[in-house]
Amino acid sequence: MEDAGEDITFTTINLHEILFGLYKYANSPKIEKILLLDVTDFTKDDAILSANIEVKAEKMGKKVPRFDAMIAAVAINKGIKLFTFNKRHFEVFEDLILFSHSFFL
Image (cartoon, rainbow, N blue to C red; front, side, top):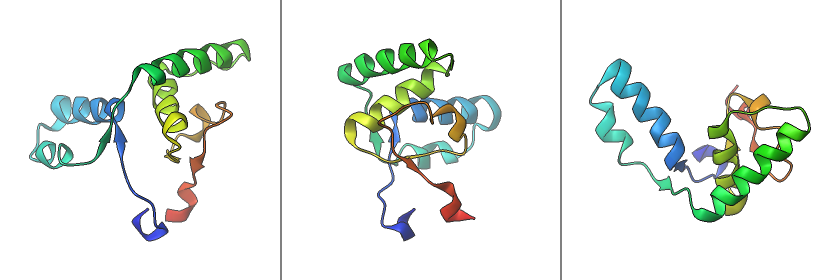
């Protein structure tokens, strides 16, 4: 992503997901390195938007994981492109801009 001229940040939700996995399965020195990364907070505005877009997705018959709606809301509100290997979870969110992982292939 750096080669594409993109800054890299994680949401506090992504940080939780990463740390959960490391604490549960690895408990490695990588935890200290992860904590040095830039993190974008989940705010009240993000909570409002995530609830709204999750309900909208459900009404369209597309159930999405709650964490994914929360992550999408942070990206939409901050104007951040979202990188994911699980594009299917995020395609339902209209205003979300996805960063193509084909750049890495």
